[in-house]
Length: 182
View (cartoon, rainbow, N blue to C red):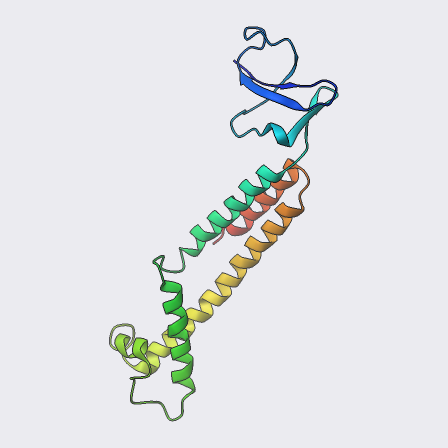
């Protein structure tokens, strides 16, 4: 069994697709073999001089960007807890830590620092040490997160600039190689 695209010889426009032998199915119009008809969008292709030519890469670009964002999210989840609202808590902890560490003298009343106060003895032995842990983690995430974001955005720009499926595939390969070490 083969996959085929039926096309208008005058315009090259693909008018339909099917799986099976064209002769057995009674196809009398022009047709061309198509590999992997699953996901094949006939609007993105036409037939020129007996060969498939890509008209549009919209579908491929959309899938590529979905892949980039999906993989980027999976990699990020290696570094941050994946529960609703956690990013906001991380930001609040960093803000508290900066405020606490910049006060002079060091505060003894922790009522203005609810996250710090709740983690003394768990995360670290003192409020100062907890604040330092928050700052260190925020700094580490800033380094890793900014690298991941650069890789993600560069890949999306490359995909959006691509004019062929081969260029899209090259952008995806580059992205996959760049993000693999994380």
